[in-house]
Image (cartoon, rainbow, N blue to C red; front, side, top):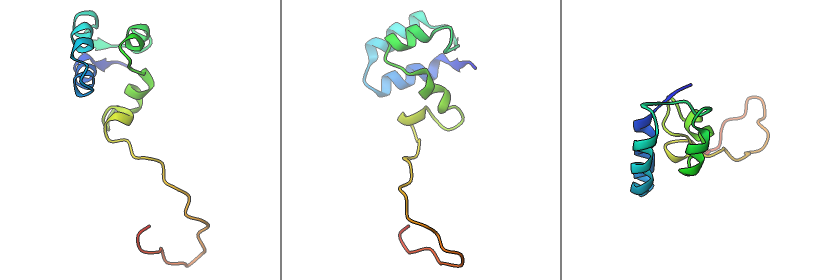
Length: 85
């Protein structure tokens, strides 16, 4: 699966890594294949799994991924949810 280079550049800029964004702009193709450019992504501090996991909903953990829900105990049949959960 390919990722637009602009998404990677935006992520680096949001992190305040303008120097790495400039490096990526010169070295990455317009469409980035994480398998082929994985070494360069790692050098830039980007985990390809975060990019792939975020497609369609942002860039993984950095943009909009929900934290895991905490366990709220067993649900009893017919029980109403408690306010605030």
